[in-house]
Amino acid sequence: MEIICAGFPKTATKSCSAALRELDYNVADMRENFLHLMPIYEKYLKQEASIEDVLESYKSINCSVNQDWPGNMLWEELFNASPNAKVILTVRKNDAEWFDSLVKFMIAERSACGAFPRYFLSMKFLDWGFLGKIFAISDWIAREKMQLYLPNVFYWERSWTWQASIENIKKNEAFLRQAYRKHISHVKSVVPAHRLLIWDVSTGWQPLCDFLNVKVPSSSFPKLNKTGDGFLMSEMGDVFQLAMPEFGRKKKMFYSSIFVASLAALYLITRKIALH
Image (cartoon, rainbow, N blue to C red; front, side, top):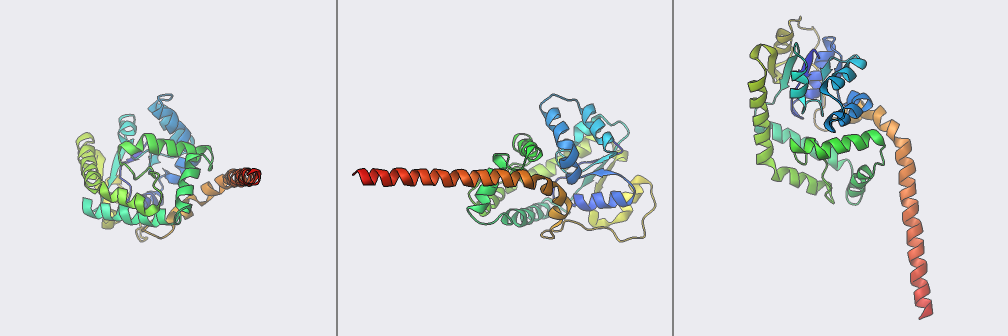
């Protein structure tokens, strides 16, 4: 790996990726993670593959930079296996600003699933693997591993409504803000100063280009994935499209089963009434 990104979610990681791509780095962000890397991360987390195998998977898709989960949460393993890599830790102005951004993003993302029962069913469909193998793997990673870093953030815990899920995040505010601060301190304690950029992207191109020893582009600095701008779907649209045929089949089978079960229950009830 040339660059290892270690930023928490909602630290402008998408803007970071866009900036690095403009500087001609090949970045494996969320889309690439879902299309190519989730299976090897699953094997690694189940101790069925080595971190070197993970790095080979990045090489196989011609990417030398990680971004988004699970790579950002496993940054230290990637760093220890990449002796020449630099580390970029994207940050917010402070932990309060970070948490506020996180909550706003989660409200926008989860409310898009709709009110009860649509939200609840969406979560159950994910549980039941309706979106196919890759989404099932990502859900397992979030539930079993990423949950250890940021509870109820990566893993969409199964509340009845999206509002309840947001309240659960808010209840964890003190812990999450502490986790954010501890993460920054830990990265600083592990990575030598000359290999580490702690970067608030609001400062623009200059710190990044100085760190990478490249010329500052003449273009404006990219600002992506602002809350509510629909960036997730624009980035992940083709990934969701690949999952739609299987999702459609399984959802149809689910509702058909409910319909048949309802008819059977109605028949038994009416028969019991008739016998009496």
